[in-house]
Image 1 (cartoon, rainbow, N blue to C red):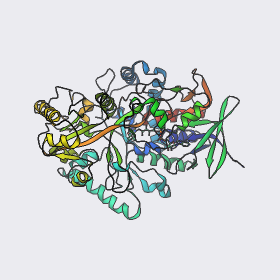
Image 2 (cartoon, rainbow, N blue to C red):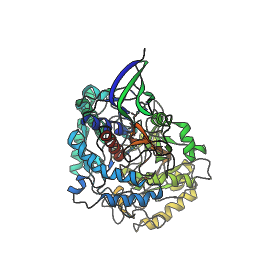
Image 3 (tube, rainbow, N blue to C red):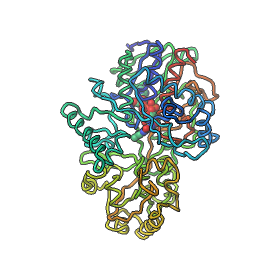
Image 4 (cartoon, rainbow, N blue to C red):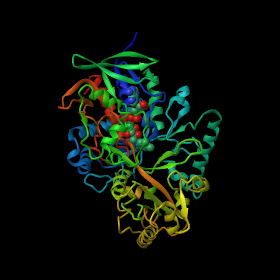
Length: 564
Ligand SMILES: Cc1cc2nc3c(=O)[nH]c(=O)nc-3n(C[C@H](O)[C@H](O)[C@H](O)COP(=O)(O)OP(=O)(O)OC[C@H]3O[C@@H](n4cnc5c(N)ncnc54)[C@H](O)[C@@H]3O)c2cc1C
């Protein structure tokens, strides 16, 4: 006998998109059920930095930042061109500040503006030198009680000491803990709290980043009485009279028919775990090249499949089918190597990236989404798509290299495991990593000549506010440029990866799923990466997936409650 359940709104998935839709609908008086395929909730959002891109927020206005939705739209148009769906982008820009105000007034979610975090192409028309990206405040995981065990932990490679989270605002303190008393105090408190936590908990309970966001949302959902079924994948949608009226959910070894009187929200996180679809859409995978997706492998595109089975349109016409990042692999004594995304180390002073010929191929201080296509292009005629992030001894001790942290952490374990490779000279390093020795030596020599003046004549590192934000504050004359002249030299190998998908379901500005002809499928909504990127497959700034995920979740929740 199949089971039965009823609700007003069924939400599929427990990431940013799902929780936002569920909490909004519940707040507006609807009876909501959330279902999650995994035994852990939080999806990719728990792996993320939790940063949101929300132009013209109340935080920005309070900080005196002059911005507007029109300005932000101009920026999106200049970056995404004719792949921008203007109506959907406008709907996002209009609802986003309202969404953030709603969450901060009615949930445990708290965000802080990072006023100098510039857009990724800040010099394009409408671009901003800071004020659109916000980071979540730390959250005390103990407030979740037993539920903490089911909160998906961050990527293992991104925690310190096997279980301590480091937020974006903690990073400067950790970099400076050996030289600035205030930072030493901040770091001491973090380590002390972590030490105490480990007597009782499997990992640190001072949550940062996406874990802090999801924990805050989950606590709110629990307080508002929203049931969250774990280990409960949606198998298929139910359609009656041309309208989505519910879904069949697998639970405890049987099928449960869930009737959703108002509708279903798909927030199952996109298709980064669907090998076949990726092989069709990612050119380098089709060409047999290495690639590593960072979202949970169980994000297999279920939401997209459920909807397309009912005639929904799948939008592939995006600049890029996914959000790219270069990835390195940290070997483990027991178990497979851990992937580590290289978001910021490439842009610090004293680092360059080279191909197997030892040549640079891009301004390394540009965003990860720009770096990977350049790497793919540079390696087009090669056997493998890979490059090496290279630095000297001064840089690695100051900033670390990928998952290898800076001083005082010892480098030896990272060298012994083979994660990083060193060489007393550029030629020796090159031979050890299979790069052309003469090529690398020439590249470092040429780069150093400009770097001594704080310049990068070849690619222009440090020429905009975003690059300088990720560089070394106070490093003059160019926060992104320093010569590599303090041997030994170090290298870590990078390959293409992604942090989530951009191709997705066709939707309108009200988060309603559309069929291939652009007609609304009644009762069906999408949020997060199940929905095609509102950025047209571009990466305009920090937080451009979770900002829209929370916003369109909020929009869907309101629509379902009859508010427009
Ligand atoms: C290391 C890293 C850092 C990142 N940092 C940022 C950042 O700071 N800012 C930003 O904007 N983006 C960031 N991203 C990208 C961002 O995390 C994702 O784009 C975003 O979290 C996707 O949210 P979502 O709600 O769509 O999906 P998810 O958070 O992945 O949630 C989807 C959930 O749906 C569940 N599900 C799947 N199928 C089913 C089914 N059939 N039935 C029920 N449930 C199902 C999944 O198990 C999952 O729990 C980062 C990503 C990574 C990997």
